[in-house]
Image (cartoon, rainbow, N blue to C red; front, side, top):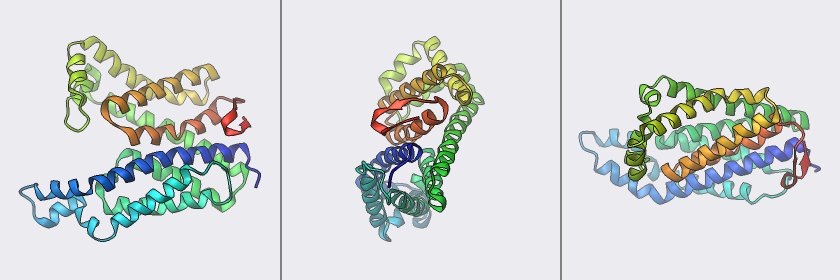
Length: 270
């Protein structure tokens, strides 16, 4: 099989998503006992309500096997350096297992998980007509999905008074789940900087669809801002899976928006 450029980029997208899959599976397996403890320590709810909320019942009826199987598929996809004949079947398997895990464990139904399901669904559909043209259409769809995801996130922030007045970032960073108390206190003392970062994030997310028609230089600036944004959230908030779910779509976006661009590690010029 001689992979086309579009198929090669699509393969890279899938391999990057595999990083997020492996991270999530390792976290689920390592924190399974913590979920049980959290459910046991929650008062005011019946055992059935606790199980439904935390998904602890699933760990007794095969979820560990599904998570382990998902980890194996993700690892196989991650170490698959060649665009062979069977990597899309691996993606289809990941789609099925991911949907089963999402249905059994509510805590895995976050935005990053939803994006992975969309990516795997789109790639799996190309199995119906595995041609370079269909692969290109898939890449354009994924690029539109990336723009839509960012725009929706920015639009949601725009409707929040906390984001508009700059208090959202210190507030989020001071939480227990995504907290960085030192950074939150530092930003709280620098309200102008906090406001600038908040409004800048909103402006960048809502205006990113401009890459669909902008010159290559503008696209590069937007994608560079995206890299810095996701790396900063990973370092300060621990959103590691979130980073890889979005980074996975950047090769598709570059392919569709920046025209001819040589990328040696992809083995093609586009």
